[in-house]
Amino acid sequence: MTARILDGNALAQRLRADFKTRAEALAARGTRPGLAVILVGEDPASQVYVRNKVNACAQAGFHSAKISYPPDVEPRVVFDKLAELNADPAIHGILVQLPLPKHFDSDAVLKAIAPAKDVDGFHAENIGALMQGHPRFIPCTPYGVMQFFADAGIDPRGKEAVILGRSNIVGKPMAMLLLQASATVTICHSQTRDLAFHTRRADILVAALGKARFVTADMVKPGAVVIDVGINRLPDGKLCGDVDFAGVSEVASAITPVPGGVGPMTITMLLANTLEAAEREVR
Ligand code: NDP
Image 1 (cartoon, protein in one colour):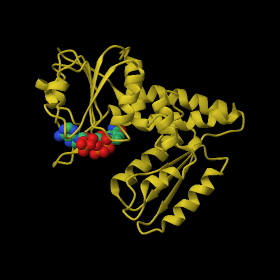
Image 2: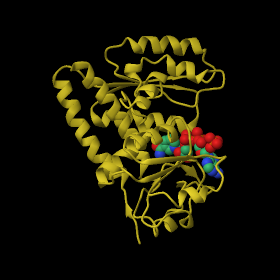
Image 3: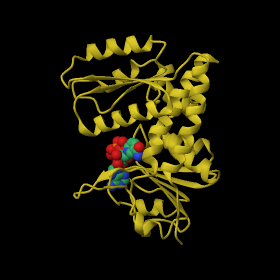
């Protein structure tokens, strides 16, 4: 079997065209969706992510504000800025690029974002709403994964879904969404015994562990849908996922590539959340 490639660039492009139209409709009513991104420090990867987010906003016709601070900034300065942005009517979404420097309490920073503007969906109130089954904002990466299923006509109902990784930003919300879509969900992590036993049962396998080419063909059930969230940099500088794409695409029925799979969908769903926040406001 050669797997169908789930093309994140193509899907992202289609969704973003729709967002642009919706943003224009809002603008015609006097509201331009606005996203504020706070970056603390000089981490090169974070700088690239923030630049990509700001560019994506511009292409979709959104307003964006990038606020950068040096790595040794006083946390109080960032909290004051968050309070200002929470009250700013031109800003519908606020995002603090993680990770923050060690002298910051990240949980306290995320809590300081108004839940109605928390477009990353990391505020405890929004995580709680997701758990209860009526999410206000869905964390962008798992939200993007669900778009692949919807677009490709893959219904998780009744399927065995296995997730590798239990982080707050990917693994746990992914599990919640698949559960709400009526899959039977297993979450694996570094302490899981006999990981391959679980992965071989999976009709839907989501790899989010951050280990290059960890999932090999012998760990995958023939015909499974394999979603590769991982982004790993190889010694030669190239990017690869957590899945051995060449081998697994001979076994799976559908697979996301890296790059060009989940990555472009994450920023796309950030736009979706910002747009939804702006639309809610004018409703
Ligand atoms: P974390 O490091 O926060 O979490 C990794 C998870 O994988 C942990 O739960 C850990 O278990 C588990 N894990 C690590 N090693 C193993 C192992 N050998 N066997 C089983 N489980 C293991 O990572 P994130 O969730 O933030 O990110 C995961 C990957 O996804 C990374 O490569 C990241 O770059 C990528 N990513 C991609 C995005 C995109 O847009 N495509 C967005 C966000 C992340 P334990 O909890 O026990 O330590």
